[in-house]
Image (cartoon, rainbow, N blue to C red; front, side, top):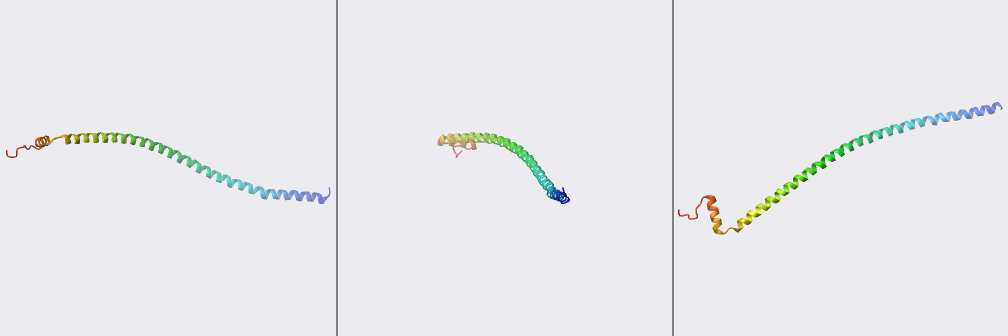
Amino acid sequence: MSKSNILNIILIVGIFILLFFMFGGEDENYISDYNSKIELLEEKVDSLHQKNTALKSKADSLGSAIAEYDIKIKKLNTRIYVIRKQTKEQLNAVDLFGDDELERFFSKRYGQYSDSIN
């Protein structure tokens, strides 16, 4: 081998080493940038999972509150139905009174006599 061949080989190897350091160093920065972005995204995902868990528990508590209110509403509707039925029965009973019975009822109730001359 001649000196020029050895010099060419050393020059080629030097160029490869120089290219490797030039482009190889950027890959590490590139990777570290993406790793930091990935870590930030993982933190966001974790915080969203925590918020989701809190929202699920709140939804469960609201669901149980709705069930309790539904029971209360059914009870109140039943009471309203009973009151309406009783009121209707009382109105029907008053409608069945004749004139004499109504006069007797009000005279007893208000302490008036049917004869106003006394």
